[in-house]
Amino acid sequence: MNTIVVKNYDEMAKKGAEILYQDISSNPKITLGLATGGTQIGVYTHLRKLHENTPLDLKDITTFNLDEYIGLAPESDNSYHFYMNKYFFQPMGISKKQTYLPNGLAEDIAEECKRYEKLIVEHGGIDIQVLGVGSNGHIGFNEPKTSFHCRTHEVNLAESTIQANARYFDSIEDVPKKAISMGIETIMEAKKIILFASGSKKAKAIYQLLRTDEIDADWPVTILKTHPNVTIVVDEAAYNSD
Ligand code: GLP
Image 1: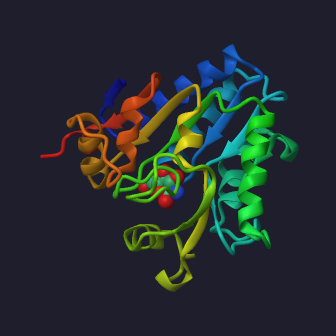
Image 2 (image 1 turned 90 degrees about the vertical axis):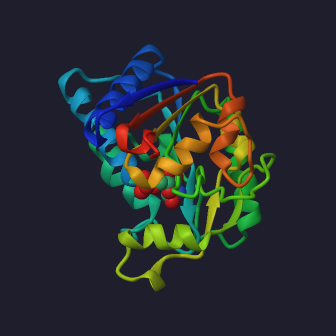
Image 3 (image 1 turned 90 degrees about the horizontal axis):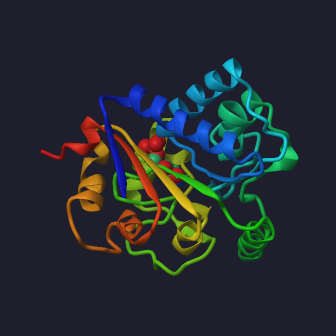
């Protein structure tokens, strides 16, 4: 694993944006796996600034998001559809037909998960997967104890995730209890993975990833130790666990 430790959130976001900018420039037909959450807002904001200075050719890229809440419409301002439009697709001028997210309103969730997996395969798999990490070590919405072999699936969110994400909602009762998430196996098939983490709330998960040898389903992020091409951009608060 290539670990880059930076001073703070803003440095993480800048470094992350530079890496993504470089990767997209060198492969205009790239398929990106994208993540949401507060961690990525800065990365997307800086990427947009780089793109405004020297435009990337984005007409042939494709994006697949990691996850979406079940029961939220794309127009709901807490849905990941809404987040992606706001922070990435619209500012970068990426058209709707290039972007994919799981449909959290699908009548048959199991079918939707299969459809999503099939789409990823039809596009030749994911070249670069962007990841954040939950304070409980989740990647995507793959909560502790999820099988490392799962594909895109329906998830019951952990109580700690519902609490952590309540900050984005009017009240904790509004946080959906379920989501669709790419599976850990789906994520691990990406050719390259970039994980971002900032702040002391992520320190325990980063400790499990970088300072132990264990691959432990209680900390889903630890599976990244077995991937051949992982870059981690982490700030000091997330890196220093003491
Ligand atoms: C969320 C998302 C993840 C994200 C993580 C961290 O629940 N499902 O994809 O990486 O948790 O979120 P944040 O960056 O807001 O801390």
